[in-house]
Image (cartoon, rainbow, N blue to C red; front, top):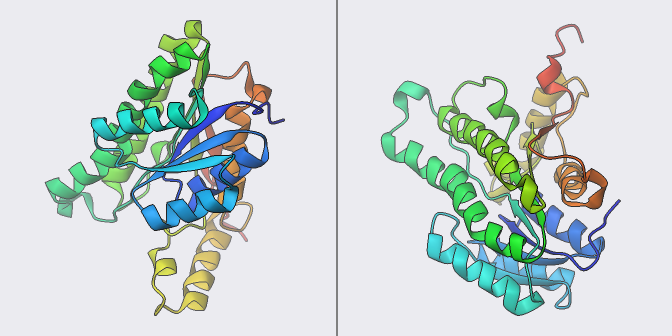
Amino acid sequence: MSGLNGRVVLVTGAARGQGAEEARLFAAEGARVVLADVLDDEGRAVAAEIGRERAVYVHLDVREEAGWGAAVTAAKEAFGKLDGLVNNAGILRFNELVNTPEEEFLEVFRVNQLGTFLGMRAAIPELVAAGGGTIVNTASYAALAGLPYIASYAATKAAVVAMTRVAALELAAKGIRVNAVCPGGIDTAMTDPARLDPTADAGRSASGAAELYRKVVPMGRIGQPAEVARTVLFLTSDASSYVTGQPFVVDGGWLAGTRLFS
């Protein structure tokens, strides 16, 4: 499926979770990967694990236009070109809409929505120069279905889906495909911050999340980062050569409905 041999792909939010799994999988499928994040120690460790011939790490705050220019330059200096982008970096904040401070809303907007916009804008000229390429933006189940307490997150992810469609229309003639992946509940530190706390009761946290998703997800479990990564691989590879402008839902059937009677 891969079709990634010789391709150079920049993955943001690549220090852990979905981004790290995407970077590992892409490298295993023949790509050279630029891992970008603000978590420098973790990002460098993942790049070292993949290997110097296949991966480099670059510090990138996706909210900053200058940082994007540096990341694209790093990709070209390391591997000679850029022909794929995965806009994976994102943050989540829980709050009632009426109690969400303006600064909290703007914080989520700057990472999730502005960061995706700046990433596409920085990468597109290089993808054109490479003769075409792919962009995969990470949206969310929450972009397509209502969930309480995440108004800022849902709004930004819905905007990511909208920007994906616009970009796909504008770039199709240039040989650039643009799609979005919409994960549901995925077992990462973003959905369960207790995973990052060494003093937390990890067993209790894990069992609580497992019980929640057993109840609401038709497949009866939380998703794994590798399952999202495989979908992103498909959208980046030649296997999806006639696919653009689409949101791909990876949610165990959650969007289809909930398990009311089991």
